[in-house]
Length: 528
Ligand code: B12
Ligand code: SF4
Image (cartoon, rainbow, N blue to C red):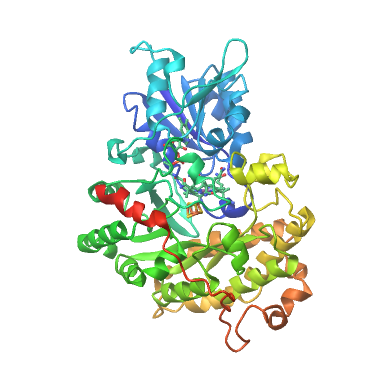
């Protein structure tokens, strides 16, 4: 059979307008059925012309589409088109997992895949391709579909694969000729683990990777498998991005991976980046040295808020803003750039509190900041809680892009959110940011001189692309409020003093707690 794998349209807002990541989902499921012809069409990087695309669809038997929440309309549009050309359609990924009814109700979607895709996809393809194993559709776990009477059927949940090494290597050959860039650097992604034992209020990871009979579903690949994947990437790229949400969950394992990378000599030829957590790096400062030695030049950190009450309510109790300040300084001192995720307007935060977080992000002097109006993804408990309180304001999933507000709070209306997001981007990027960054990045003897080799793309995509996106959204310095223009007054209750802009510790002096599940994590990951 001929299978066309599709990553649907990119967004015009948020990260997606300046970052393009390769669809690891599609190349992972494609690896499960190597006997079938495969082609990957990525709306983010391939040129789309409807007429040509339609004639292409005529040549395929099956169309497999991935979709996050804000992409879902584009995914459905592609599925509809594919059905018009006689293809069998399969949609998987975050949105189909979180809200399967929304996808499965369309008669042009044949199979909606929930959760981990590899084994389910193989079984669907075998079923379509002559059904040699003679199974009934009811026996394929992890799918939802319409039956003959137009009723949505949800089959049993798909159990997660215990050993991720059992999955074949992702089909990187399908990415040939496609350019993926992360803030100006060419990047390929590798996943070394799945799942997360934490439970941040706003996150949907635990809904994605889970067996409902098991609370923790964190699984890892072995070090030898990770090294095979590193050698499998096209080394013409500037970076390998360890793309799971939290690369450093298990500290012992992270040390082992980093030691192996250092010994391999790879860091002299390739840079690395990852996503991590402040509390882990704070408690394990040696990891920062080792990340540096292993060639890590970028880290994504969830900074979230300067307000401990919000961090506590988000289930990030063991992180304090003072810890964030310390970790960021240590990383940047080594020349590791920081991409910070900041959440604006968690329930309980007033406009002034949000502005204090914006100013804190500016003072942290991080390289890149993504300001997200608090977002509750459908299918999460947080969404249900907000829905019950009547806080959800956007039904259209295209607004769930971490840029547009999709809810309000008791303190902030949608209009307030729009204003605060605009202010955050304007205050962060449109004042001294360019000068500060240029001074660091253009210094051939400075610690960020590794950026020089990708400077042209960085300027074109990161700076001009990013600025262009802000201007098209009407974001200029005019939107910055008087409150944010007077940082000394704004931050007087936050910092120890204006000469000493260290965040005051809360009165009860929160001590970072070792979470009970940290011990479990060490145990689970002994397999490495
Ligand atoms: C790397 C990454 C990116 C990269 C690249 C993504 C891409 N390829 O398009 C970049 C940085 C570009 C990115 C952008 C965005 N991202 Co992102 N991203 C991730 C991250 C960290 C890893 C994704 C990944 O590659 N995982 C590994 C693969 C193997 O897993 P997978 O994608 O889930 O696929 C498996 C299953 O889902 C399933 N499956 C998936 N698709 C299909 C299709 C079929 C046919 C089948 C059968 C199965 C199947 O099978 C796969 C194998 O088991 C995830 C978090 C995470 N840990 O997953 C967030 C995450 C997916 N991103 C998220 C978001 C919100 C965004 C943005 C909207 C952010 C923004 N404001 O710009 C954009 C939107 C992108 C878009 N196209 O619309 C959310 C999605 C939430 C949601 N409900 O949709 C996540 C979960 C982060 C989070 N914690 O909130 N992202
Ligand atoms: S640590 Fe990251 S992946 Fe884990 S629950 Fe929190 S936000 Fe989600």
